[in-house]
Length: 256
Image (tube, rainbow, N blue to C red; front, side, top):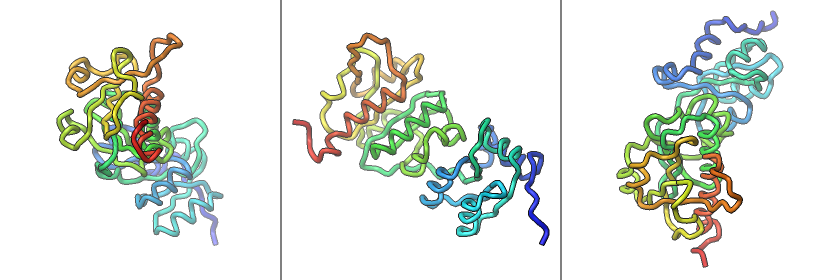
């Protein structure tokens, strides 16, 4: 039997999949591309079965996943894998998936990325939401939550939570969520908030939330910083607030 020859970076299947690093291509096709065995397994475990898997010749693990789920497997060389992954030191495999439909699990809090542009911060917000059993909302002008860079930073969290578009504060409040704007100063410390279901609004790291959003939100929340630093990383601040707001559910009752 003739050995399988890995396909190179100019192969038409590789070229088509690599285009999914472009936001417009993802919008037009409704697909995205993920990288690495952990993300692939998280997706499959959640019932998100890839259209195609690209793997190196010796990647038996990915070949087994493709065989178990009747997915097309395309064997590629390292140059092709690098083009697909978009990173300097890619971890195979790469896989093309349909972007899941917007969804909400319901009955739990939501982190809302309001105009957040950094993919790393967005991915960390998604990972944080998954860790504490919250959902993730995103507004117009926010980086695509299903971009490959965000998927890498999310570390599988995408497939454990509801991710949905948010059009207004009204829609959040109609869903039974208390809107809480995260601000650097002037808000209530998170440990002083009553137990409940919150939509934590997180703005762009440099400029924060728009003034009209802060004014319209039901309350503002601020992390006390006695060390005197000006601000925290947006995703780090959100994680600290969500941790505090999750305590009643984690401990089984309201604060004492």
